[in-house]
Amino acid sequence: MILRYSPSSPFARKVWVAAIETGLDGRIEGIASHPWKAPDELKALNPLGKVPTLVTDDGTSLYDSPVICEYLDGLHDGPRLLPPGGEARWRALVLQALGDGIADAAVLWRVEQTQRQTLGQNPEWVERQRSAIRRGVDQLEAAAGDLAGPLTIGSIAAACALGYLDFRHAALEWRDRRPRLAAWEARFAARPSMRATLPGEPL
Amino acid sequence: MKLRYSPTSPYVRKVSVTAIETGLDGRIERLPTMRWDPDTDLPRDNTRGKVPALITDGGEVLFDSLVICEFLDSLHNCAKLFPPAGGERWAALRLLALADGTLDAGISRLLELRRPQSERSPWWIERQIGVVKRGLDALEDGVGELGARIGIGHIAQGCLLGWLDFRYPDEDWRPAHPGLAQWFESFSARPSMVRTVPEEAAPAA
Image (tube, rainbow over all chains, first blue to last red; front, side):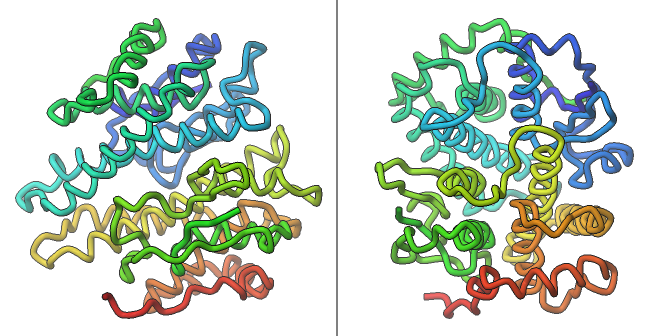
C-alpha cells in the first residue's frame, strides 16, 4: 500500500500511528508531498487534492483519514481501534470527531498565518479558530476518562491533534488548566508509535 | 432523541434525510435553533457548540454529522445506509468523503467571500473552486456506478448538490455534469429531500 502524506499533517500522523499500533506500517510505503502544493497525480488519486490518501494493494485510492484508519483496522487481527458496535464505537468516533475538529481549526489557523502573503491575518477569523480549539480541548479534558481507556482511533486522533498544537501553536498553551488531559497526553506521547511520527516541516 | 440543528446547514440536512430515510425522524425532537449565520449556514456563535449534534435517549452527545448518521443507521432493521464491511463499504465511505470534501470546499469559498473585498485571498478562492470542480467531475464519472439502492454516499451527494443550488444559484453545475443532473432530478424528488429543502434564511439579526 502507498500512503500519500505530509510530515506536518496531524491527519496523516493519525494514519501512521494507527498503522504502527496495528503492525501494518511495514506494508505501507510513504510518499511525501507538500500539503498546499498537491501535484497533479495526487489530484488524480484524490480530487480533493489532500493528504493523507491511501492507495490500496488493488490500486483503489481511499480518503479521508477516518476512512483510511477504518480500512487499515480491518487488515489486522489485533484489538480493534474502532470497536465494531455499541457505545464504545460511538465514543471512539466522537473522540475522533473532536480530535479531528481541533486539528481542522488548528490547520486553518496555520493557513491564515502563513498562506495569505500580503493580505495579513483577520483577527476575527483567527479568534474563531482559537475558540473552536479551546472549546475542543476543554471537551477532551472532560473526556479524559474515556481517553485513558483502551487504545482507539479516538485517542490517537486526540493525541495527534494535541501534538499538532504543540508543533504549530505552542503559544496557545493547551495544557493550561487541563491537568488530566496534559497527564494523559504525556503518557500517550511516549508510545513508540508517537515518537516515530513527530511532526516535521513539509518538504 | 434531540437534534441541535440549523435550518440551512447541509450537514444537518444529511442527518435529517438519513433520519427520514431510516424511519427515525419521528423519534427526533429538534431543539430550538441557535442563531445561525445566514451567509454560511454555520452557527454564528461558535461557542454554543457543534451543529448538528444528537443527544441520545441516554444523554450522550454525538457529533459530527457522519457519526450521527451511522448511529441512526444502527437503530433500525431495514436496508442499511452504511454497508457492512467489504468493498461496498469502502466505496460508500469514499463517495461520502468525496461529496463532503467538495461541500467543505464550497463552504470554505463562501467564508472567504464574506471577508472584506481587500482581504480576500484569490489563491485560496481559486483553490476551493478547483476542488469543487474536480469533486463534481469525479462524482459525474461515478454516477453510472451509483446503483438504485440508496446509501449514505447518495445522501451526501444529494445534500451537496442541493446546497450548491442554494448558495451558488448563479453557477449552475448541471451543464458540465449531465449525469449528475439527471440523477439529482430523480433523487431530489424523494420525500426525504423534499421535506428538507433549505429555505431562504431570515435576515441577519
